[in-house]
Image 1 (cartoon, helix red, strand yellow):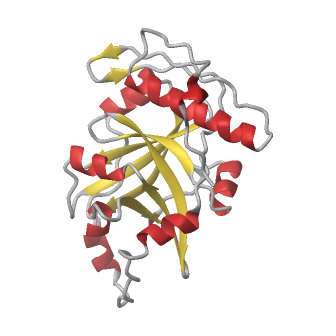
Image 2 (cartoon, rainbow, N blue to C red):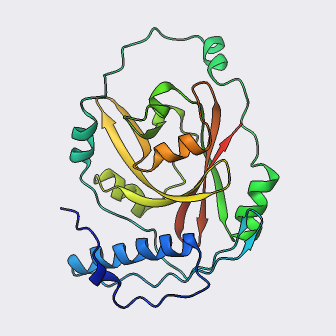
Length: 241
């Protein structure tokens, strides 16, 4: 069972007066990971050092060599919570190549310069990978579901995950990751893997609804999801085309 954080978990925290909102967010994730490691008698994770500077929309972060931040959740509980709203998809007739092209007419493009500058030059990100380009469907903006689906059938490559991360997801252990949304604001979000019958998909969930609302995502929008690394930390960037 997942343990919630309490005031005692932060008793040794030293607040830096220069911290911004993301510094506090990253520190909470770090404390949560430490608590999880201690409960499983594992060595504590290396400390995350972060300092934020504001220059318009640009952010700079400094990390030590930290491992991917993970937070275990019970996949069965997630599926049970959503069971009342999810309806098994109906089998559709096979589409021709011409029909498939009409679903996502915009060919995959390179990362826009402003995102590349922020991720690579300002944040020190590396290993940029296009994970998926897809059309937003109602299920992606349904506030009751609160999830962004990444079907295996549309994933460009699974290489955005390292071997340890792939194993965690295969073992039904969700991961806490960092997402840069279309407005270039960062937030923590949960990455999970669901298997539904013969179909598998990744999902971004838990804090997805505010991203939909703040970026006015709607049915029919075309989006891209990119992955990148800040040291060993798995991060994502969502672009609206």
